[in-house]
Length: 268
Image 1: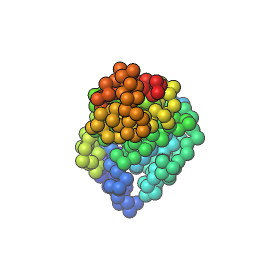
Image 2: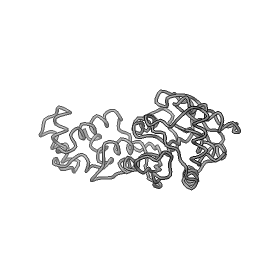
Image 3: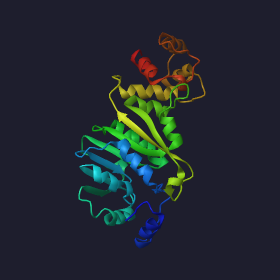
Image 4: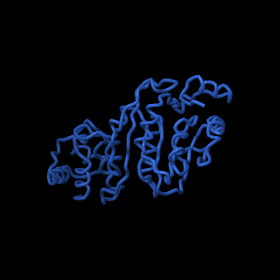
């Protein structure tokens, strides 16, 4: 069964009285070359466990199962579960679980996370797996192109999202995927991003994010003004603190690197 064929996909949906959900951001990959590129990027070993979020009809799941020791596929949509029972019936190393990934507690260690996720889920899912007790060895995510670019951004145009992800991990855009590679076709292009969790910094995360969020509280305002207002500090103290760390008080938060934020927090 060719799961990259729109005709086959439509037949599966008709058979199971289902249709793609706009609310859940369901767009199904129909380009075989993109599938193979994702598998190449993931570099799956025969003994590895793969956690796949949003397997849909199982197109990528089949490819993952052919390479990995085990695939755990988490699917929120009950109607997709019924389709997966049909498309994955020949694979014995796949466990399909009907659950919301944000509420699912994974006990597995030493695994890779692979997911095609809609915009509304992106930040929450990345945060969940970067901050959990047993983060994946790496995440291979298909997300909106602009969001991927934001996550991987550097100063002078770094965002709060980029700082948050890069505090915990190395990030890299692997390749872009045209909206024409999906059925139904979304309105914008996607990107495959690799996120590799790594312990880079020793500062307390809660203090780090308290200060960073204060700095980004009003992104168009000067850094000193934001830190003074939201941390309730004396203006002179804030300016001295920034200058001590070779940061101009008139700079904006988007101009600071993650390393600079860490140094700032360390010197508080």
